[in-house]
Image 1 (spheres, rainbow, N blue to C red):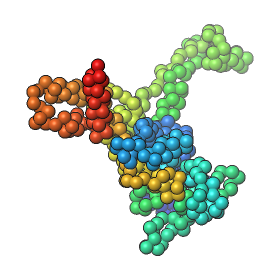
Image 2: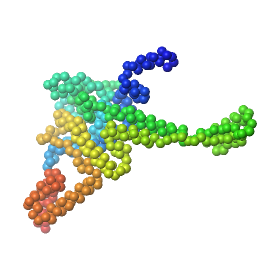
Image 3: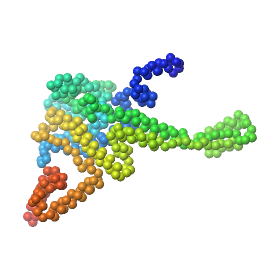
Image 4: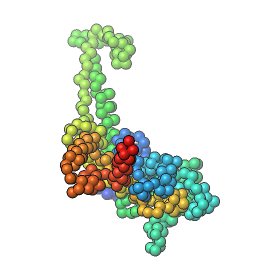
Amino acid sequence: MTNIRDFFRYIMGNQSLSKRERTRQALNYPISLTCDDFLALYIRQDMAKRVVDLPINDTWSTDPEIIEDEIKETQFEIDVVNLFIDFDIINICRRADTLSSIGRFSILFLGFSDSNRWDMPPAKDAKLLYIQPYLERDVLVGPIETNPKNKRFGYPKNYTINTGNNGETFIVDSSRVIHIVDNAFDNVLYAIPKLQPIYNRLLDLEQLAGGSAEMFWRGARPGYVASLKDGAMIPDDETVEQWRTQIDEFEHDLRRWLRVGQVDVQSLQTQFSSPTDAVNVQVQLIAAASGIPQRILIGSERGELASSQDETRWRLYIMKRREIFANNIILYPLIDRLIEFGIISTPENDYAIRWDSKWILSPSEQAEISEKRINSLTNYIDTPGADILYPPELFLERDMGLMPEQIKKIESINRDIYKSDVVE
């Protein structure tokens, strides 16, 4: 500010900002954020990438099972398996999940080989060529369906997609798009980006980490003071210049000794402090806001009991995320849409998407459960008449936790063993 007029202009301009906005401005936080801000932070900052990637990588770390019939393999199940392999569906879902976490939403664009215009539903004989995920910044949501009797009431009729090729865009019908929103807020089309609530904390963390490095660089190496000794004659300009050259070379490691007889050279005390406490506060706030246990977030295994509890709680969260988000928002809509257009055979019965429930248990917990089941099975076999009071099928299902198809497989193996014994 160069004059009093600029000062008053600055004061009056700030009056239009809320108290919270003025605080953010004073702390050098951005007042408004866009998808580009979140993407830049995700690409550049380690902690931001960790917050986004951790739940996503764990969610898609194992493949789900799509089951129609517990006993026999159906054509629907075969089509789904082939689809998952041919199009690398799990990797595509992981990418779409990441993009939806960076922005408010993402989409999966289904590329068909039909002759219809893309702003129309695909033809019935269309083949699926590709599935392409897009980030929010590359998608413009079209007009919303306002007819309350339409099944897509409140959802877009179409989307405009930016291909990233010299700004080229194309309009696609909503039937060609799967709209992905993780934990929608006040609108079914949009969520709060994962990095938005912790954006300021991530900036603080970056300043602390960068500032501590700068502090160490400036403070760990001592400065030096050169002063004339008592009784020394005031040197001429040529001598002063020689001393200055020597000290400069010493500072830049070009010499390791000084020849300045009339001068005392003393090093200053180094000054730097550890940023650990300040960094820990930011990490705690980030962990609290993101819902990721701190030890899981930073990968620390200190404290065996607490770490085990955190891990179990985190695995339970991932299982819930798989069922609520991965299944209901991505996989079911995608599979149903491909059934609708004949890419996958129509199932004769309702199908289900299952994830390995053992994943929520740590190796030690799995070993403990296995030991208990073995002891239970041993006691059951060694108890005379147990199979009469408690049928084996019921025991295997309730006590051993086996699925019906697993029990049938055991019975089939036992029958084969029995037949081979009889033949011999």
